[in-house]
Amino acid sequence: MPPTTPPEPARRIVIAGQAIAYQLRRSPRRTIGLAIDHRGLRVGAPTRARLGDIENLIHEHGQWVLDKLAAWRDRAAPETLQITDGSIISVLDEPLTIRLTTIGRSGWQFGPGMLYLRPDASGNARPSLEKALREKARAVFAERLAHYAPNLAVAPPPLRLSSARTRWGSCSQRGGIALNWRLILMPLAIVDYVVCHELAHLKEMNHSPRFWSVVEQLCPDWKARRLELRRWGKLVAGY
Image (cartoon, rainbow, N blue to C red; front, side, top):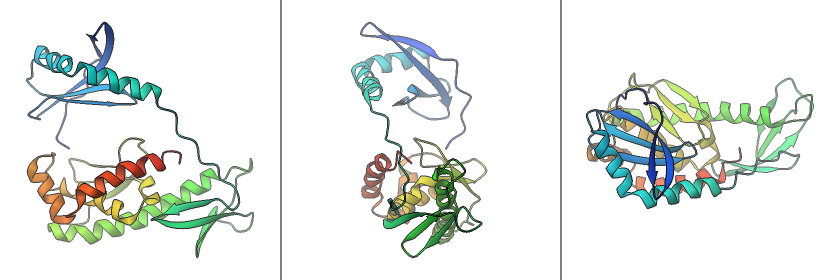
């Protein structure tokens, strides 16, 4: 992503009689953008954009802002996955049956169609599950980065695993890539889309038409995969 200045202190704007807090971040972008998630209203603006112009745009999209904020407030919290002996999870679109065991030194072990987990002293197997999935994710993601990087004539970048709830990947100014470990719960085609998306930032640190042409070079059906990513994101929210 392009370099940004630290976010400014939270501001407030009145829309249809409602006081709305928003966070403003400036960067070398060309346009003003609005985004709403669990953190509220966030505004990205060009470095020299006037505050009056920024707030005029917010007012122009006032009803959209109010509707989106209301949707986030009303959204039910995702159910936390319950791990029991015999539970079935999907890893790279393949079913894995979980077996709880007290045998073995490791907290987990993959087998054909199985994932063996050793619960902790309190009987909780979630820590072992996350460690197992992270280990699997690191190996798969590194392999996919190594697979696609030569297509852009770049070396496979350093990989970091992320736990972000609303972001599946990112690329730093130094060329390192972070990928959300929960992607391992999705089909490989979606993992590949996110990998290609972040690798494309090594060529274009923005979301310009040139950036998307690089993505398309690596992943011709990226639009369909992006839609699937949104659907799968909701399915794995409880992990």
